[in-house]
Length: 283
Image 1 (cartoon, helix red, strand yellow):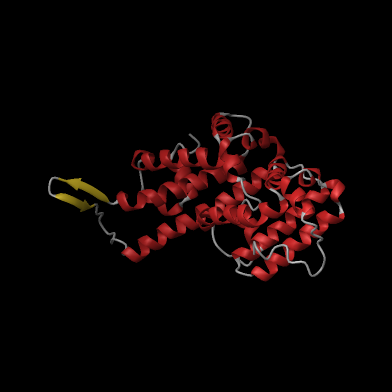
Image 2: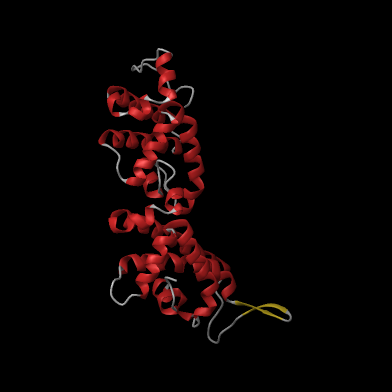
């Protein structure tokens, strides 16, 4: 495990300093460790970080601290409703301590919400950190967790904020991802081809889009961001600009020109001019 002591937990969440036993938190920490392994890191990278925490020499303190913060906030959020309750023969009772007053429900709810928000922020920072450090890419980017997390042109809440007026959290982004994927399938793939969109997603995973691909990727991200913001006029205009760029550089987009969508478009005699309405049926 990455987080193994009560001291590490309290360092991540000072509010928890009244908890004396690691065993009180262990079930929730184990759930959090499983979550970060399956949803964010993947098995290989997770195990390498565990080994790193056990090593007396090679350690990446920034990476370990970020992971422990996520694990602690996830575990504390899950554990808070149970930490002051005990089951007796007469039912549930509240654990009390001398000179301490129980916190109000509102304060407890606010604490749990802060744990969620902190976890979301730390996840974004962890992903950014991993993206910036090539030495972790083989272990991370080969995992099913990474593949699932990056199966859309817009991959993180930070990216969505960059390309739209959206202001949600990582949690909100996870709920929005199905819509982004659906909009990509319904609006972008019929025009730019399913094969080319899938190629762009794969090139993003591998960090190897060409300059021409990158130009199209940015425009399509702005188009998807405009859809999320409810600005369909901008979404159509930006997607049209992306198609116009491709049409001006067809030799650089072989996957697109080999696609059935492009061949059907050429067969119809369509020309992408300023007044063209190619996206009207999709947008």
